[in-house]
Image: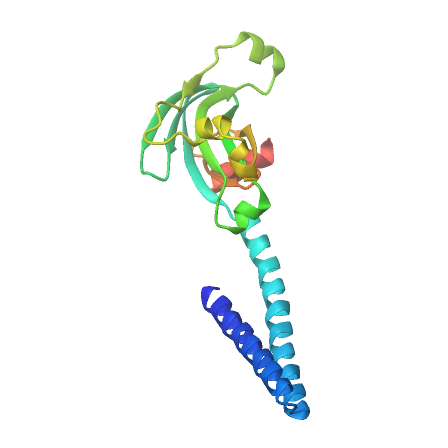
Length: 217
C-alpha cells in the first residue's frame, strides 16, 4: 500500500511539473506546446486524485474491519454447571478461573476513535475488566452461586482512558469510551477466540466442542 501511495505521489508530482512547464511555454507564446503539456499534467493529476480516492476508500474499509486478538478461552467441566476456565491473552499471560453457570461473559472497557483516526492507524484500545459465569435461567441467576474474577489492575505507563477524560476529547479524535461484553455457552473442552473490532468485542468458537455447544444453545 505504501508503494502504491508513493507511485501516486510521483505521478502527481509529474503532473505539477508538466503544468509548470505549460505555464512557462505559454509565457513564451508557445501555445500548442503549452496546451500539450497542460493536458498531460492535468491528466496526471486527475489520475492520481482518482486512484488516491479509490485507495483511501478501500483503506477505510480495511481499517474499520480490522480485528485485533483479545483473548482465548478454554473450559473443562468439573461438575454440574461448574467449569475450570483458562484465559490466555496475547501477551502469553494465563489466568485460571473457577466458573459457575451455563455461559461465560467477558467484559472490557473500550476506547473508540473517530474514522479519521482509524485511517491514520489508530485502532480501538481495550482493557479487560472481568470474566464471569452466568446462568441461562433467570431464577438460577438470582439464587445459584455466582462467579466472577477481576482482570483489570494498575496499568503501567500512560493511562489512555484517564487521558481521554482529562483532555478535550483528544482534539476530536476520540469517538467514545464505553463498556463492551460478549458471552457464549460453557461446555467441556470448548474453546473460544475473542477479538476486538472498531466497535466492540466479538467471540467465535475455536473448536468443535464450542460449535456443538452453540448449536445446543
